[in-house]
Amino acid sequence: MAEADRLTIAGGVPGFFLMEQAGAAVAREAERLAPRAARIAVLCGPGNNGGDGFVAARRLAAKGFPVEIGLLGRVEALSGDAAAAAKAWTGATLPIESLDLAEADLAIDALFGAGLSRDLDGGARAAVLRLNDWARAKGKAILAVDVPSGVDGATGAIRGVAIAATCTVTFFRRKPGHVLLPGRLQCGETIVADIGISESVLAEIRPKTLVNDPAIWKSAFPFPRTQGNKYSRGHALVLSGGLAHTGAARLAARGALRAGAGLVTVATPREALPAHAAALTAIMTRLCDGPAELAALLEDRRMNALVMGPALGVGEATRALAFTALQADAPATEPRRAIVLDADALTSFKNDALSLAAAIRKSGAPVVLTPHDGEFARLFSGLGEKDLDAWRMLGLDEIVLKKMFVALRSGSKLDRARAASALIGAVLLLKGPDTVVASPSGDASIAEDLPPWLATAGSGDVLAGFIGGLLAQGTPPFEAASAAVWLHGAAGRHFGPGLVAEDLPENLPPVLRALLAVLGQ
Image (cartoon, rainbow, N blue to C red):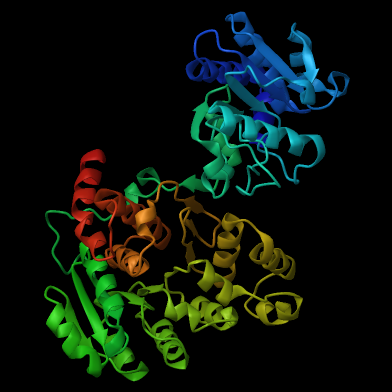
C-alpha cells in the first residue's frame, strides 16, 4: 500500500489530494452511521492516519455536525500532509485525554493506520481502552480509519490493545489485517474507498495475497463438458485406516465424488473391507495392506489423484505409504499423480519435515498439504540454525532458509503458510476460520467468510476429499486447494447450524449450481 501511494504521488497526484479523498470517504461513512445533528468525536494520531481524521472532521463540520478533535501528541509535531490537514482545521484541537466522550454519538478512530508494527503503550493504549469502554457502555459506534488502531495491517495481530470498530473505511485495497484473525474481528463492516489511486499501479506492485473468491480460480475450475465422460473427469484414490477407523476415508471419498471426480476408489486394508463394502455404493473399493500393494495399485495411472491421511494411523507404516506414493514413477509423457497429504500422513512426519520435503521435491508431483495449527506445529517445530546444513542439501539458500525458519517460529499465519510452502515444495493449506492457501511461488489466498459450523469432527476429511476430487479433474494444486476451501465454506453455510461432516458433500450440489449460474457456465 505504501508503494501504491508512492507510485501515485510520483505520477503527479499530490499526497494531500489522496488525504483529502480519504478524509472525504471517512466523512461519508460517518454521515451514514451518525444520526442527524449527532455529536462526533475524532481521535487523531501523530501520522497520516491522524491527517485523514482532520480532513474528515473539517468536512463533517461543514455539513453542520458538532465535531471535536482530540490529538495524541502536539499539533506542532505533525509534519507533511498531516500538518497541512491540521492547519486547514479551524476548530479547537484538544489533548486526547481532554476530549469529552460523554455527549458524543459517534467516534472516529484516526489514531494509527495499517503500518503499525509495535505494541501500543502510554497515552495511545489509554486512548484505545477508553474509547472501547465508552462504546460498550454507551452502545455507540466507532468508525475506524484504514484499520482499527492497534491492529497490525500486515498480519492481523493485535498490538497490545485494539479498537473494536463498528465499521472500518480502508483505501484502494483491503490489507491482510482486515481478513486474518484476530484483526478481522476488530474491523466490523469493512468498506473499501476509491481515493484516486490508479488500478495501473497493480501491475508494478504485483500483489500475491488475495481474498479467496471464485475470481481467483474460476478459469481453472473443472466444469463438466458435454463431450466428457467419467474417465475424463479423473479417478481419485483414498487410503483408508483399519477397521476401527474407516469413517474418515469414506468422508473424504464422498467429498471427492461430489467435487466432480469421475471415479473414486477407497483403498482399504482387508480387515476393513466389510465395513466399506456395506457402506459404499458409487464408490469402489480395492485391497491395500501396506506399501507393496499400494505400489501395485498406483501402477494404474488412471488413478491420477491420491488422498492419504484421514484416520490412516500415525507412525512408520504411514510414512512408508507416503514415501511409496511419492516415489511412484510416471512415464515421461504423462503428468505426475496429484497427492493430498492430510492429518495422520502429516503427523507421521513429526519433527521431520526435512524427509518429507526431500521426498516431495524429488518426486516432482503436485502435492497439497492440509494441516491445522497443531499438525503444522508438529511438522515444522524446532527448525533453527542446527538444521541449516541438512536443508541446504535440498538446494536452498542459507539466507533464505534463515528467513523461513524465523517466519515459521514467529510470523503471521500468512507468513508461516508461505514459508512452509516454499520450504516443503508443495502447496500448503493452513486451516482455521481464516484458512490460508500458499504456493511455493508465494501466491496466497485467505478465506474471509468460513462459517463456524465447519468446526466439527470429520470436516477436514471432507475438505481433503474436495481437494482430491478437483485435482483428479486436472485443476492445478493452488487453485484446487483454494476452490475446495471456498466450496467447503459455502456448503457449510448452505446447511447452517447443526452441521455434521456428512452434510458437507450433500450440500455441495446447490452450491455448484449457484456457482455455475454466477459464472455463466
